[in-house]
Image (cartoon, rainbow over all chains, first blue to last red; front, side):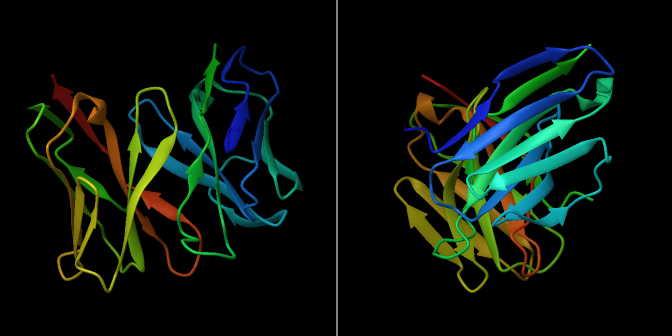
Length: 115
Length: 111
């Protein structure tokens, strides 16, 4: 009964490849996020979707494209992977229609290593 | 730029001792949250304090907020080895759902 799940947990791939990370939440939340955590543990938001609509799009290379087929899913597709994309990617969700709506629930993370 | 800076970067204590972590931020906020991250895991929400609150408690956690100094502190009392983790503060940005995370404090509690 995992609240926010991500697949895969580990992803090792070659530079130049295209890969996708999937995220699902069963909390009934309207808002979902993607974060990137670098090797220094610095956590930065990348995207946010509310009810399948993009609401936050930080300065992220357009090689990164989020897709939300429904409000329970937010996938992240990365084209032409670069060495600097190596990081841990976290998905999160939050309720927008009930308190405490600011609290975010995180997935376990996907550890991406680009060789 | 990074919204929150945390101090200290790392903290090592013995079980039973108290641990205090500090967070400073740069702009006005509606609320400030603290999250815990165990090694290799996702972040877990601990506590939220709103801008009109000065202190909040949850179990062994005590959070203070000083909006005039743009700072917050997290106190963990009677620490346990299981408290070993990284702790992050996070502040909201305007009326969005966007959170800006601090740099984190790595806490090590020795049994």
